[in-house]
Every structure is written in structure tokens, then in C-alpha cells.
Length: 217
Figure 1: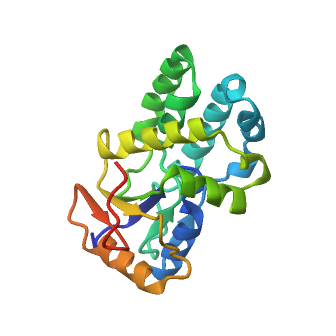
Figure 2: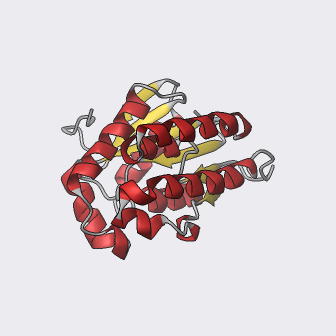
């Protein structure tokens, strides 16, 4: 996808979206668009009690993402690439595992009203990792309130991500297994990822840094 202008790096909590988005933006001489998670007043409360604060947290994120995304409609003409660490549709991925049926239906109606007004990514780089690897990364590098995360909920989130990108996807997707790779320090694997992005021909394709690692479906 050499003509791609708007790339999104997505994946579950702990998979390494933000760091990779920053590095891709630098390597591609583009601009990183990072989600402003720290401004969500319900985020810490959500991790303490997902059932009680799930709807408030997701609506707060939805509005913040909408504002950020609509700013991309007229991007800097001198910037070849925009690289974001979040997809507007991420809200539904989390909502499916965090909201009650009535809340989910209302949230979906809000998404449907706002979705046509945000730009569509040219390619989504979907980062996968096994639950054990995600938990290890979260406990080592995550924010304090993310640590000791409920494994069952995280497994449900991973399933929701897989369902969204591997079955309900709406964009060209490059699926990347990150279990055994550190793109920040492994330049060979990182350059392989760049090549996979630039040669992506549409639809859904996979890139595995190690030949013996398959996609986690």
C-alpha cells in the first residue's frame, strides 16, 4: 500500500500499539496521532469496576476519539503518513465485553451516528499477542491501575479484537504476531514490517516476524 496515507496500529491492552505507532511515524517521516487516554476521568474507575463504570468510560472515549479523528479530515498536505495508535471503531470492541445489553445497544447507536464523519484508515496494522504475553507486558510496563488485570476479561477482549478484525473487519488489515518480537529493538523485524506495510495489496494479510509463529485466531 505505497499510496497509503493514514495508518492505524491497533490491538488489545499491553500489545505495544503506542510505541510502534511512534516508531512507524518517525521511520515513515509522518506524524503520530496518539489517543489521549489520560484525559478520561472514568478510566481508573473502569478498571476497578468495569460493570459500574463501563458505559461512562466508553462514551468518554468515544467523544474524545471523535474530536481527534475529525481533525484528520484535512491533514497537513506536506505529511505523507499519519500513524495513529487507535481506531475509532475500538469503542465497539471494548463495549462488547464491558457493557450490559441495553448499554451496548445505546452505545452502538451513538457509534453509528458518528462513524460516517470520521476518516477511514488506508491500512490497519493489527497487533496480536497471547494472553500470557499481554499480562506480562501490562504488569511490567502498564500503568499502575492496569496491573493485576483480570485474565478472563482480557481473554474476552482478545476474542473481541479477533472477531472485529478477522471476521467483521471494514478496512484492509495486516495481522502481526508480536509474541516473540520487540519492534523497538529488533530492526530487522521492524524493517520487515515496513516492507509488509508497503507491499500490502488489500484485504487481510499476515506478517509474522518469526517463520514458526502463526496468527492467533
